[in-house]
Image 1 (tube, rainbow, N blue to C red):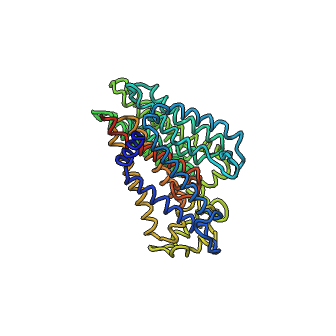
Image 2: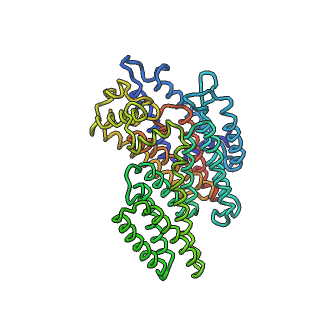
Image 3: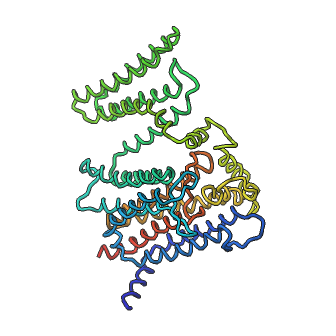
Length: 487
């Protein structure tokens, strides 16, 4: 009994109360927002079991109980059983499509009577634990050997594959946030650059296809110009004597002049083979110089150029792989298709709601777009538009500030961890929150395609709330035990 009391007192003394306070504030604000989003003029009580807000209150109560249990577990247990937990969750993800009901084309929800849970939400904390356990292994260094990269990436990719099999693309994409953790632990910034440039290539290639420049579709022309600039920049970085850089600049200048002449002569059809051929020749030239000068890093420029060209021509294949409704959402997000009555309806109504809120908003329960149900799913994925309409710019900024403080606080907790396990796990939590916040807000204001990602602690749903509660309270327990680790 005395030991249990001492354990409880230790938790109360060492727990990070700033994070707990932010959590309580956000879930409380979430209930109010859900009530406002689902209010239908019948004066129902916020805590009524028939209201979404009342159901969310019950989920919150269970979350508090779950958080308390997680705090009472010895923090060393999370590290010890990280891999078994991960395997169990993978098995659960594997069987989900076979036992789940089809909901809007997705088989990702398992029903238990009147309650439904989405295993993909619980895969987040399991994957974070497994990744942290891997990095905390004896003498494990990500950059030490290639097999370490393979092991880390496999831990991230396995749940993605299993969730994609459930036709739940949005939840699967969430795990891509963990690549930021790999970057924090030593992964080259070139990998993130490659990912960013791949997105740029995809967007430009899909968006700009209507016009041509010197016989080349404007999107592909812009991409190839970017590849030329990247080749020159990389040669400048990796070639100390700048000989390769100078020759590339002179060579591409000559090609540009030749293409202008071809255009004047009406030989636009030669534009594509000329520009494409010059890039391939430049890549081969850089490779030859890398061997001659014994500068291996120049091979990075060659690989970047050739892979970028290959990816550019594979964009249409990748785009056609998407389902029709996903293609339409991408086209709407990029402004290629308007479709205000179809795929673009939700986003358009959401932007109207947020814009009509002004600076201070229309007031609690006074949002016309919200009350007249113009925005579907406004109590779940589009909860932020209710905040923007009724609380205005001030309310939206308050929510943004809460997320910013919480994320910065978690990063602070990560940096003070005495163990690699604690640090990596904390950065996993921060990465998930950053991804969810940015993508959800981006969806609501039309900057990102609608992919069904909830706003943590605000959107209605027990699975999402439980998933983030588990993530956060495991971190709080690990952080609370950091002093005993030091001793």
